[in-house]
Amino acid sequence: MVQRLEDVEQVKIEEALLVNGVPEWIASHKTGEVQDLHSLENADWDFPAIWVMSPTNSSLVLGSSQDDKCIDYEYAEKIDVGIARRRTGGGAVFVDPQTLFWVDLFVPRGHRLWNDDIEVASIWIGRVWKDALGSMGVDSRMHDSAFVKDSLAELVCFGGRAPGELLIGEKKILGISQRRTRKGVRFQCALSLAWRPEEWITLFTDASIKDLKSAVLAAGTCVRLDRHEVLNGFMQALVRS
Image (cartoon, rainbow, N blue to C red; front, side, top):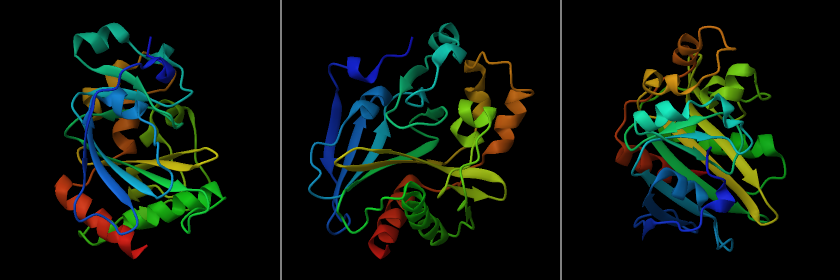
């Protein structure tokens, strides 16, 4: 069974402030195992913050309320893939050191970038990402309408379409989720740098979705960019927002 976030007692994370960050933002780089990174909570809501995440292992990350009965734990152990859980909702995301660029953003309530409307807030961060990727030659489109959810989206994040998320054609490249508290909002952004779901789709035991492997393969794609280039482009776009 996947470990509950509240049961994670000791989090081992290496942290370093990012130089040449974004004015008025606290930017830091965090390195550690996937579950430890997802277990982190922001302690300082005085300023907006950016966490650039560098996972040291591979894990399939379930949404906050996603049922883990669909996971083959024995097979996950056999191929050395962890099963983790995040604080935001949605379907599962495969996280490893190579194929995903993962960044969390924290916007305090009352800040100029805060918006009470969940969809409008997601569209704002989606526009920042679209601007960033456009500056690197990626022609993407943003999903700017209501959340599109079906049985595939409930299982796998990239199977759905949420406001602000980016696609190339009909294939998703950027997933966005958010969690709101009385202190502010946490955006979790996952940009696909390599789309290889055949490496992890067999972790699911759910046979209710017809041609699951083909459906997931068709749902997403990737941008073949260097992660340092992505970080710089995103930071610059955030300054312009």
